[in-house]
Length: 194
Image 1 (cartoon, rainbow, N blue to C red):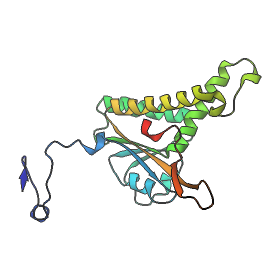
Image 2 (cartoon, rainbow, N blue to C red; image 1 turned 45 degrees about the vertical axis):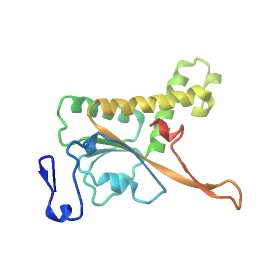
Image 3 (cartoon, one colour; image 1 turned 180 degrees about the vertical axis):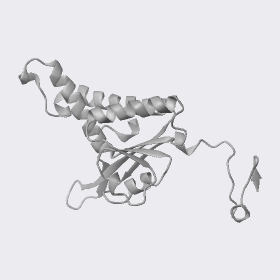
Image 4 (tube, rainbow, N blue to C red; image 1 turned 120 degrees about the horizontal axis):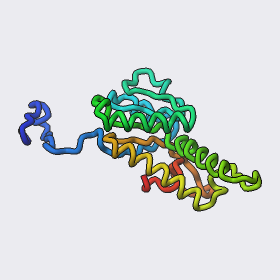
């Protein structure tokens, strides 16, 4: 079977396989991968040689056969500098072989963003009595700022020409002893926002 100008190999054509002539390139997609601990999320994202993994958790270095570029992210200044430089390089055409930025793992990414928001808040306050220790102490404004910061960074990635992937943990919980088990994302603020 031929669709467009790309002939499929016979063994795929015989299975009824087809290829869409104008499908969106995989690299420009936006993907959230959620799963329990140790199920292979990081292994999966590190298998794509066209990806650049921002390793916030520190787990991607343990992937044995990864093909992606892995950049260790120990703190917010390293994160924002790396993100800004990667986006500028992509816009300048300097990263033709890489089309995806992976944030591994999303809940640690949110902690990194939260710590920066808290630091900026505390630096603006002259009295230590006004200092906060958690994003929750800033109330709804803090959560909104966290969500908007994350969305701004994902938009920056996409606008530069990359697709993006955010990995995240799912945790099982049971509301009552004999109630059903639910799985909740560790990424806060409603995953649908991303």
